[in-house]
Length: 128
Image (cartoon, rainbow, N blue to C red; front, side, top):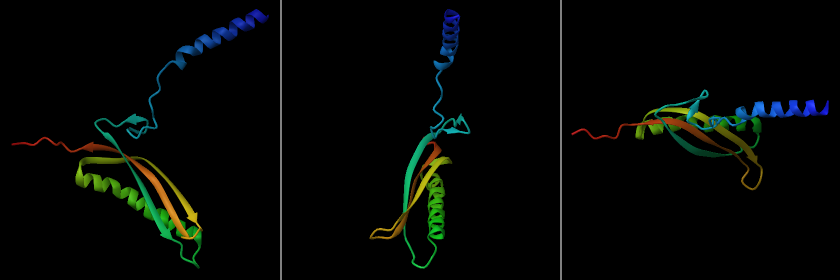
């Protein structure tokens, strides 16, 4: 009985080995959108940070939400800036953010995060 259990264990291990050797694409890469690579694009990543003073007498939660709105407006504007300067298309593929209420000497709200975009660059060929 012990030898048949060992044989079954080895058989299951060997059956799983080919599946473990397959290469899995890096889906965390910003050049993937919906699990698919965005063809013809480059990855552009930018970090955005926003600091807003806390207003006394107002609810901190509402002030944090307002600061986050400002962050998202700045993050969304990154594609606009890239489109004006070097790209013909831009798509946000990943966005991270965090908000901190700093009650130290400065007493402010800090929102920071990263915007990852799939960008198709403009054709730089010069026609005569």
